[in-house]
Image (cartoon, rainbow, N blue to C red; front, side, top):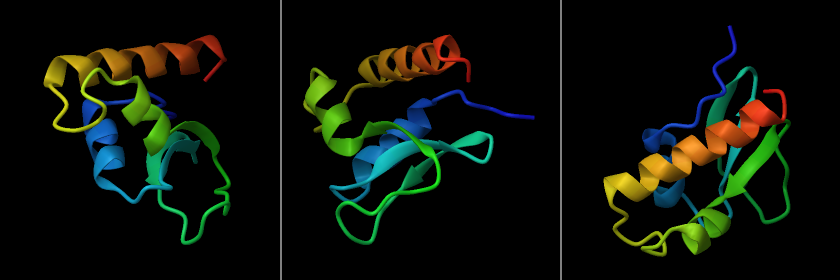
Length: 85
């Protein structure tokens, strides 16, 4: 069974990872992918990069509050659902 729901925990893990990390849909789930070098791609579909997430959060990704992460997770999950995930 596929679970392509983005959670607050996924977003927290992404914000704690390296600067080139991204959240990807891979193998029927969501995972944080940390490339070993810039430009190296995973086999999954990129949902959002750490940089993109930080730019879009009101806190800028620095000490985000639960409500902004919850809203971002719901928004990303909805986007995946609309794309047929």
